[in-house]
Length: 229
Image: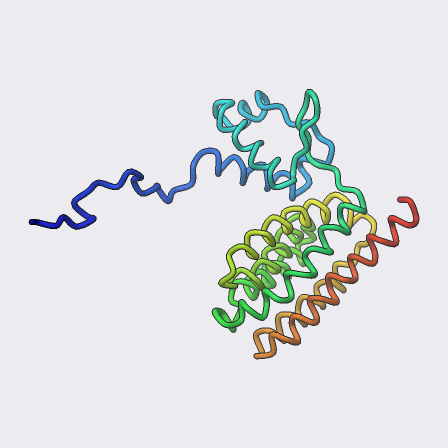
């Protein structure tokens, strides 16, 4: 009797094309507009208008808005979809989850990327945007720095969770935090210290510095809650 190998049977699921879909590109375009402040918290998003501006049909726009809803960046009302407005309670909750995951992920990421190359590149971008006075681009580069510190972790569940939290953090930074606490220089110094510790062979120290960095934001958000802002 002749045994047939698995390769003799066609796969029921053909390999996916690695190229980004139109929906993916629309998601990234909308994220860029939200994180840069061009689309502001509370602003209503109209499928037809977005489709016209991007030169696409409404179907991939609708799919992109569903993706953004799942990530928490847009909120769906009874008759409209809008960029999410974050309260100080929301912001505190985001940072409380980050402080549990991000420091651990730094230590784990150091095993695969002890030089933290992506974080180094992001810090260079932060300095360049700071010199140009472009705070929106600086906020996005800060987001890339944080991702560069944890993205090499082998725990893809934690990386995915942190990616979602970074999206909400970027929304909070542009929409709320930098308006109330314009501490760009202090934040930059903290990022430099975290990176130097991690790339210098002490990821445990970097994790502790990151924990303090995030905890400071928790405390500021809690103080604003108590003040009723």
